[in-house]
Image 1 (tube, rainbow, N blue to C red):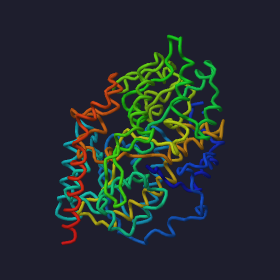
Image 2 (image 1 turned 135 degrees about the vertical axis):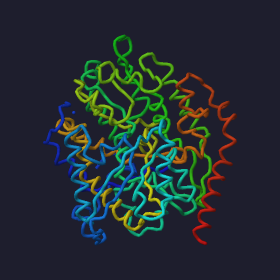
Image 3 (image 1 turned 90 degrees about the vertical axis):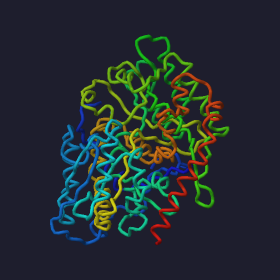
Image 4 (image 1 turned 90 degrees about the horizontal axis):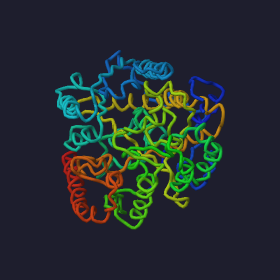
Length: 489
């Protein structure tokens, strides 16, 4: 599996320029030459987006975007973080002025309790009679939004000439998973902040680590040299052994899944003909399962519990490491924590693994309802994605790790590794279509839930469930083939 997300020199330069600026009260060219995820610095220094964007004037038209309540703060002015709020408003204003539009965000609960309601809103938009009655963009989570695209209710992004999809403001590794039979009905761009805020990372308590003989700079060097592995994390965490007041690592089932995915265990991959084939169960998966199972179930200083119930131990200063989502320490209930922290990528299986791979706890994808003006939607989406990448994302990381950037320039390189390794598994995109095996819900357990529940039963689990997946993937391919035929006619 190749994980690849281009990054511009402009962003790296911006991070370096921010080293002297501290906007957060928290105290905080990669050397890994074989890593396909390293920053791409070729020829981006003089790039001016406005010079290449289409010249359009939409006469003050309203541009409507349906987003989730859970990520609304990164779209409008509702963030509790002043710098993030300012950057979001600036991005919106730049794009509004560029195309003479009025951007309007409509937010609904986008989590499981309201998945039917959100999907209904999207469906109604897709079935609207005209572009005046619909949303221009919809941003549901994949587990209820993708199915609408497979019904033919979304525009095929492959038909657009206005998306610069090879640029750094698109997540190519995710979008490769979204394309079947030459069609792409949903995309991941940097406009969708969940790829940043919900990225699965390892938080490190600097002070607590130092008290237990761990050197922050040594950990950075491990990451940058490609030596940050599960075994290395366990070795560091073992310094908490015998101290009954703290844990070496705390995690939830999300972290277990993130660790499994971080060890390069893709569920399905495309063959030479571009068709998805199930590649999950193999000797490598068995080795990964054994290592991760042992990590979480055979060390008393490592604790994993369901639904993040133990993750408060980290902001309370009672864990050296926490495997969780990036935004956790910027949540309103944690932002005033006294813990001096930094973040690290999910560890590799071993040093021979080529790339770090970062799973994401949230799965929002953007689509264009078929009644919308698709050209206008794509033009504006591309601009919003570019300017979010330039304006909001650097400010976000500065808000989270500003002091860390000022204290150690390796921290910005760590952020780039995480950003460049963002990845959705095939089953994260097509969750309903693969019986929710990615989430391990709806009566379908997965490898992570086995580990969470202490069940060393990988072979019997796959023997019970594995045979259904080739047929499910083929059924999905046939649906796309039908969509292609309908488009052709």
